[in-house]
Length: 155
Length: 106
Image 1 (cartoon, rainbow over the protein chains, first blue to last red):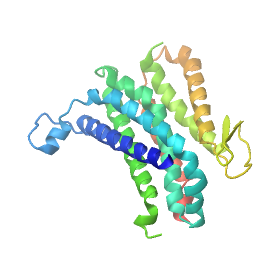
Image 2: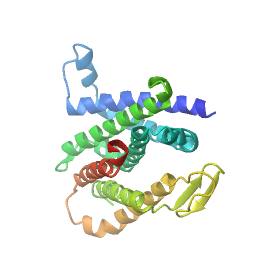
Image 3: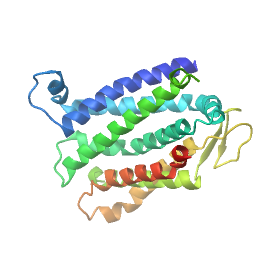
Image 4: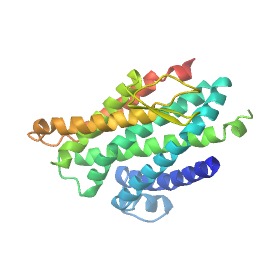
């Protein structure tokens, strides 16, 4: 069951990664020209991703919180015994970053709900989206590496 | 209640309360994964490692909601300060990196 949930957690994270990256690039580095795959990637309408990104973020965190005890009892103990402090620390940071991201979701939703009018709304929208994109990328990479750490590092 | 004024306060308060909860272990709940048992507040280990993250999350959610509500009479008079909703969490992220540096520099 835990393996199934880890795979589902990873798959949801992949979808979230795509959505938040599209949105982050469309707001931080917009393009009106759709010629070529990279310009097309940045030329999307960022606002359409908001609700899906929030739902995916919440679903991914919920699944992560369900499988977290298995990590805490088995995986972290293994990492600590193997003195893989960087791996343990990377996960600790992931946990904290994701939680900070959770607290920013209401503001993220608000900033994408309508065109920014208040002073600083545009920069706030860019900053919040880029921070969430960073958090998702960091969480994904750390989770992926830890999930495969024995194979990746020949342990 | 104006969301443009309240949500930045919530995001900032959530981040600050969360880092304080982690640092001083203000967990409203503790989970003991090995025996599948929940407890109130921060409990010491029973059998296997205790998990406080769920408790820190609950503490931060309640705390940030309370701060948002209590600060409303003050912030309603101001223009929306959206920047605190991302600047404070950004600073908290850097503080976390600093606090956890021991994992990487040992």
